[in-house]
Length: 108
Image (spheres, rainbow, N blue to C red):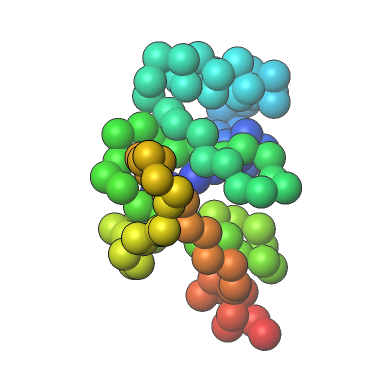
């Protein structure tokens, strides 16, 4: 699965392959993988964190408002040139697009 996943999604996917897997084990392992630099959190306003493989090139995310899944958007679709106050230096930016993924759009 090449998109950010929340712990519950990891449990649902891995639980079908690993008998007895519990949410506490998923949280422990996600935490360890973040600490070791294998995963990075994806933070969306008002949402619990999701996690993706660390080290990906700069990209943004799409959040489906129907199924609540989050998808990677490759690259940077916009050129951000903010007017910053004198002396300020921007080091990064975030862009989240909201709407319906292809699966949800087909159902509506």
